[in-house]
Image (cartoon, rainbow, N blue to C red; front, side, top):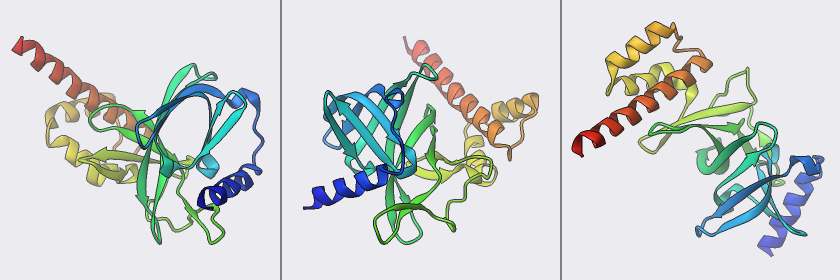
Length: 211
């Protein structure tokens, strides 16, 4: 009965959106048991649902039933990677889809605003979310540090000071040279990319010295 109820709820949510054949992209879905399914993938971010089409069969996945998925975006000609993570809500925790934006030891993810289920089971935007998002975007951005999910909104006060603990001189020099602002979201992404590239270069150099 539970699966049937979830299916009906998902179908009702999807009726709000028009699904075009051009929206489907070839990809893979990794389930919680690590089984990998391949087919045509469609991500419905607004309702937090993932669709996988294999031949004539289309399966609907909620975030809490998937570990990760990826697909080749025909529009941008790029691979897009998503994972599922738990985020604290106003009344409870919710598992949502996150897209990987910056790879590395300190990855950056984004999620379609912050959504929570109402009494009818529908996902709605939380107006007083404890995780504020930038007004210039339809997305919330999060950095993962020491397995902790931190909103990019806290970059200047919380994230950047932690980054500087390991490479203060390099970061200070980079920010000054590029004239970056610690409160500017675009510059924050540049700093995160630089930091992760710096860590990767140091790892590669250390491995080379051992050989």
